[in-house]
Image 1 (cartoon, rainbow, N blue to C red):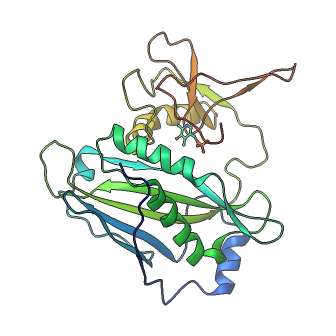
Image 2: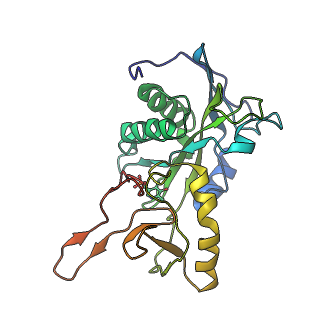
Length: 267
Ligand SMILES: *Cc1c(COP(=O)(O)O)cnc(C)c1O
């Protein structure tokens, strides 16, 4: 795959952005992932034509054919990354090319079209530039960026789709867990088995983890911890993040990447 290509972007951002005063109120207490910025990026793919029609456009609901492949066979992948405002007021991204590379791997695993890494990073930059006012300035806060891709071909046959939408949306966020320590529930459910999709950042992995997450909540825990699917005795992965152990002697341990764990970028 060519990763040195990008596309011209058509810039038609929102003409009715959230007023500055309302935005300031939102940024004062952003929560997590409920409020979105004024704009989004949408890029289309079609087999034979490749990526085309890159746009920065107003954040708005999508129109999807009810037979769109993603709604039936779950060809969907995503990334999670953040833009931060520095003490000097500059906006920075944390290793966006690493997210682009992981996105490509996820696409490969789900037999989806691959977004060239430069195009991925450019799409993220375009959105952060146009919605720069949404990047919070307080420590612990950031603009959470969600690049994702769905199969939007209208077809109910089971095969890799020939049409995709790559999109980027963003949401100002505070700290995910807050100040308190988090308790975790060790689940009997499995998240990922060898040869499965555990290393891909796909929505399906999360759908499969929600019952375990629900069970954790029922036991008063905030997060679920998954063991390996073969022996059920090795600690592998949290519901939505990698796990690390910090020992009294200052050493740190984290499970090896064997294909069932998401290759964390923080890691
Ligand atoms: C995204 C994700 C990670 C890695 O997160 P980073 O932000 O890249 O460190 C780990 N585990 C799961 C289940 C994830 O979805």
